[in-house]
Length: 128
Image 1: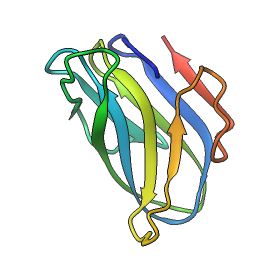
Image 2 (image 1 turned 60 degrees about the vertical axis):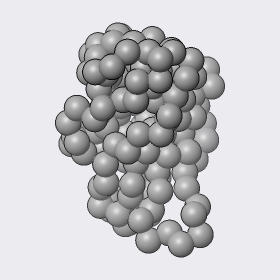
Image 3 (image 1 turned 90 degrees about the vertical axis):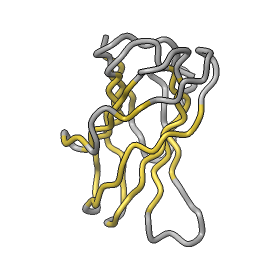
Image 4 (image 1 turned 45 degrees about the vertical axis):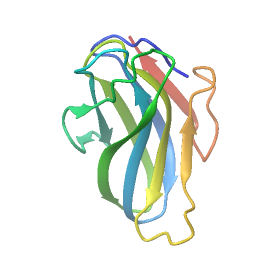
């Protein structure tokens, strides 16, 4: 889990292969204080600005938060989570195709940065 980020930091997943369709993006994130916000960018475009992160009361506790929807073409995409405020913890990001009736999803989970090679993700970059 990535903990205690600073305002303005971001983490980026490059070369994420997706089939064409509409996707729902959900993160497992939290903050020990109220007022924390993040947003997700897909291929450089914001899905939603200032998404509220749950106030979990602790840096090591997270909860699901919906980051938005996007209709994407088939191919490689770049996903960037931007921490708008400090003190946010992030455990994973789930991409779920809206038309998926089998509840299959792709999960991008932080284990140790920058090593992240699940689901056709070639690397994760954290810029401070």
